[in-house]
Length: 203
Image (cartoon, rainbow, N blue to C red; front, side, top):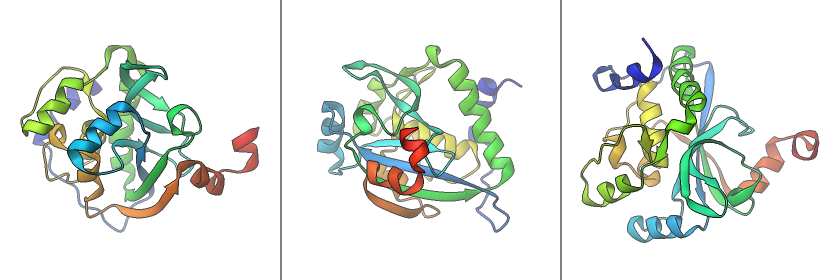
């Protein structure tokens, strides 16, 4: 079965509980980027952190989400591997959570991420879906997600409980998931300086 076909069937999967045999750690990164879209979302949510990403390493080299592909074009949204050091993240505030997962869960999530990355030109940012969140009504668009919808979907692919329809979840909803452990709050640049070696940062 192709990964995209698999993605369509995740709603029927049973949830997998977080257990003691977890060998991998994923990171959920919520950021305050200060964009007009982020501010608009913040007016609705009443929260500061209004962009969500998922990373598969502590140093955030493997960090993915849906956002703008071009720094000066807010309408250039889509799926991307994010650079935590540059662009909108350079001065961003953040809250970082971690969650231990099994090898199987890791493979399930990475299978989807890799498929989406290889086909990233086919994916769009789900701007219309943001209005669905406000109305609490799912807006279905093929190959289109907003940031927290993507992160919640990926957690669900891994068999983790998300408790709500991913299409209705905000970054704050994700932060409330009980299996996430907060590990950092502050400037993203300061976090990177603490976990990356000087060679990683400047080499």
